[in-house]
Image (tube, rainbow, N blue to C red; front, side, top):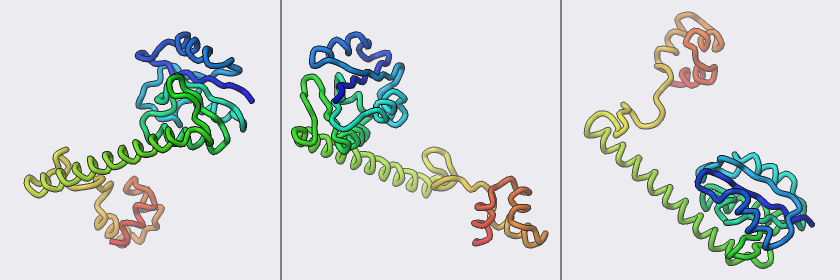
Length: 193
C-alpha cells in the first residue's frame, strides 16, 4: 500500500511546497505526481500527471490531494475521477474532508453525484435555451444569433450538385470525392438526397 500525492499547480493555485506541506501533515508520501500550469477548465483526462497517477495506482493505495477540485474541472469530471479510483479500491484523502473510500465516502460521493446531476441539468437547459434563441432569431431575421444561415453545422458541399456531377460524369465515389475535395462518406450522403 502506497500513499501517492497529486499536486495541480497553476498561476492561481498554492505553490507545490505549500500543497506538499499540507499533505505531509496527514501521512508520509511515498510517490508524487503533479501537473504544472494546468488551469481549472482542463479535464482530468488531459492532465498528464493525473493520468500517470491513474496508471500507477494499485489496489489499497491512498491518493492525497489538497482539495477535491484537483481531481477534475467540474463536478462531473471530479465524479468520474472518484468513481475510477474507488472502482480500483483506492482511497482518496483530502484535508478538511477526510478519507473517501468505498466504505466511508458514501456521503461525499452521493453529494458529489447530486452536484454533477445538477450541473448536467444546467448544461442541458442552457443548450436548449441557446437552440431556442437561435431558432427564434433564424425565423425572425433569416440568420441565427451567431449569424449562421441555418441551424447546425454548415454543409460542406451542395448535395444536389455532387449527385448531378457524379451521374453526368459516371464517376466513382472516390473520383467524385477527389473532384470536390470531400470525403467518400460525404459523397455517399449526397447520393441519398
